[in-house]
Amino acid sequence: MSRSKTPTVSLEEAKARFEAWRQNRKGKEPIPDALWATAVEVARKEGVSRTSTELRVEWNHLKRRMAAAAGASAKPALPTFVELVPPKAQPLPECTIELEGRHGKLRIQLKNASASYLATLSRDLLESAS
Image (cartoon, rainbow, N blue to C red; front, side):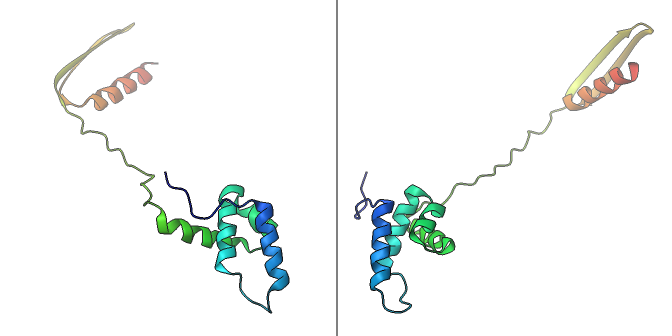
């Protein structure tokens, strides 16, 4: 497993670097890429919200920088939704259902009926008998 070229930076170290840059910058100079890289490294450990608050950088900018840094080396994401299609119900060649109750017997003969149809029919018969 290869290690990154930049050493691990703590939140406190990054905060000190940002403060030193802010004290020495000229005008509205943008944050240098090296500082952004430090912020991204810290945000991976500490989280975007905490890092953006502590380093006083905009959350959205930090999030975009993290996505850009991850996008260069990340593998494509695997699909998160997979549709499972049930197999086609095979019809039964012939089926006989015999029901016996208080009021008599009932015999039903079916040809080429699916198992789901038999389950529905049985449930409907039991409900109507109750």
